[in-house]
Amino acid sequence: MTSERSGADSGGFPKPVLFSVFVFSGVSALIYQMVWQRALLTIYGSNVESVAMVVAAFLTGLGVGSLAGGWVSSSARRPLVVIFALTEIGIAGYGMISLQLFRWFGGMTADVNEWLVGLMAFALVCVPTLLMGSTLPLLVAHQVRAAGHVGGAVSMLYFANTLGAALGAFLAVHVVLGTFGMSGAVKLAAALNACVALVVLTTWVLRRPASAAGTGRTTARARDGDE
Image 1 (cartoon, rainbow, N blue to C red):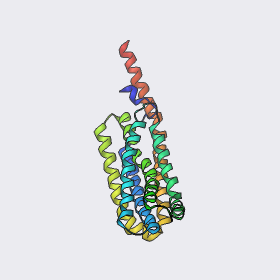
Image 2 (cartoon, helix red, strand yellow):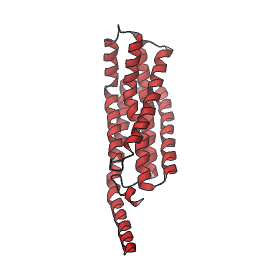
Image 3 (spheres, helix red, strand yellow):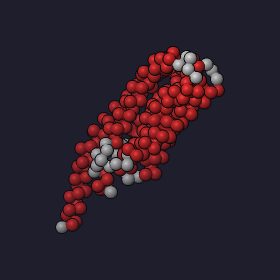
Image 4 (cartoon, rainbow, N blue to C red):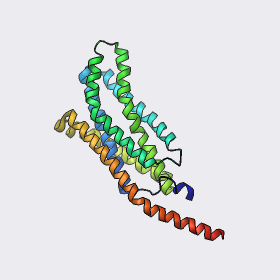
């Protein structure tokens, strides 16, 4: 256990930080979903197929992204906190250009077969949700390495992320879209992603010295015991 905790991701996060980070991450994800759904509806019309395409792309991306995040987190040498922060920044970057990308895509596919259009629209939404899906296993793996409590890490993060998603869905429909419009909504979601990345990296950097000192003391005690 000591060797696992002394890797690249030493230093568990306080629960208030974990909770707030993943609530905001969930809020941003659902704001994106609401905005992208409406953006695609304005391009291809309001129909059941368009809504189903966005929902299916989100669920597929989240599922595959979770598998990818689990694979990345399987290596003890990878700095999971840094990867998590870069993932959040990647989501923010995609969000900032998403509406322009959708409009360009809509213009390019005006005369294309509808099945091909559906597959391409699916890919446009699925790509960023791959990143979203990877965030939970990345942060869970970091916290488990640092604290050694699998159940606590998973339950806290999953609860916070689900709560954030519920809040994001409510706020997107009743507050954000009506106040800021689609363009302002994606900027707000991107700002939340950037704040999440900043908080996580800052917390990680601040806690590394204390974690390193604790690991050093543990190692010294082990050596004394062997002697």
